Length: 94
Length: 254
Image 1 (cartoon, each protein chain N blue to C red):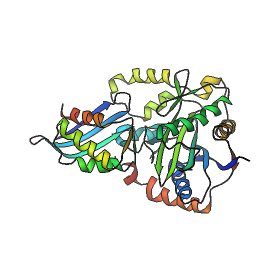
Image 2 (image 1 turned 60 degrees about the vertical axis):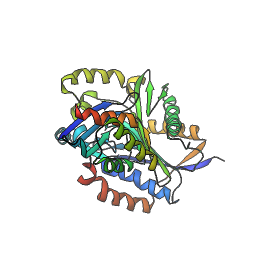
Image 3 (image 1 turned 120 degrees about the vertical axis):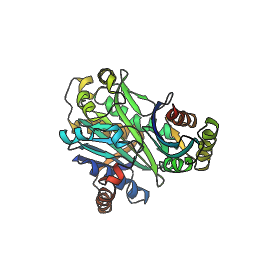
């Protein structure tokens, strides 16, 4: 199932998520994280997208996975944060 | 004697060329081949640049670009879509170990924007920094910037609006909700300004560049010396233009 969300991060930038997911199992097939935010290093968003594949679409699971990728790859966001990213992804389900 | 940095002025380049030059200077700087560099430039034809993480199809009306003769390119920096028309664009490339630039990204935005603010002062315009990456005059945006850090080098580029045509901008940029497009245009007209609107004068590119040069010199306590691209940078520019910025693979990657 394909879906899109547009979410303004509180005090941040405009996040646009394109999500392809399995509606039965609620697993991510593919995700594209786009928007006018900043992330350092920039390539970390490609890694984040790959690591999110097959993640269960629950708030807890997403937050845990995203935070672990941020920590491991020392990602610095400006205008975006882990909670905002989770919210943007979950809004694709509505 | 003050530290000397290089000043480049390159008017009227294509979108692919402009983005390739910034990247070429970044690579040359990372190899220690060139001093810290400030460049002032313009775009011909006018162009839209989108942020590294943006989707080209989502942000830009490609048919309108074609009809109006406007180019488009993806930047290596994050941030939003910008219509580059009547403006002075600046870029600064400097090693991330140079003590003149704060290690912290947000603090370095403030510092570099400080140079633009001092430059605007020389055009009799009082402005201030508006985090994350804007400069405002009377609460209206006159400048926006974007920064990347690669190869232990900082690249920040940004725009200083000389004049602005919001209606044309919205012919080229897509909006999330077409139903409220008119209201959005009216809002943006309230929130964006330019050197021409504030000062009431048409300021030439050279006069604006002179003011910005002084602003950078004052902010960083350096002397900007006129220079040109090295042969290595010219070769790298051609390579990046050909292999990256002009390709669909790059521009449509999101």
